[in-house]
Length: 113
Length: 114
Image (cartoon, rainbow over all chains, first blue to last red; front, side, top):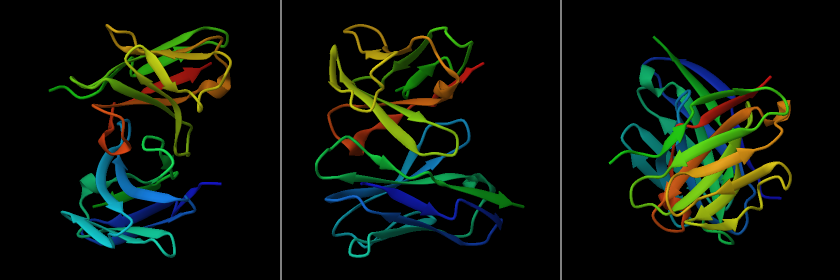
């Protein structure tokens, strides 16, 4: 069964600190992995997208890694800001469908001043 | 260019009533996707529509739920005879073509069933 699991479920860090969020998936055959940011009361917004051949990709203070062999991904946030407080969701698609996405439950990140 | 619009943002219904959720895709987008998000869970695909056609409704319950995307006007997700378990956030996404990498999400409609 295709699944995406994220850890931790929630995380609280101080402003300015770094953090790393984890994503494990069992989706097969794998196509792509994306990290979304979802602010409270808003729709998800894409941060990064990674294909099978990509190991790392950055978007400003966000850096995503992908290990397709172990089926793991991480999202590293550097020098966190209060506006980073949100849920971060790992989403995986398989090659059998180019529109159906398998969503993780997300990691709720809280940045404290 | 306005993003994906959804209304209402919040909807309260009593058990047995009908809920109608609207989604206006981004300009130029003819593909619409509906997702449901239960509290503390990830989004779950419900239905994929292209103008006037349902392409894939495999994630939508067979009873009480229906969706349409008419030639003119917004896409509508309709839930008849709502039950408490229907309480969730319903998100709509749109894309200019079929393909997951171009889906843009609306702000969602939060349905509460009393």
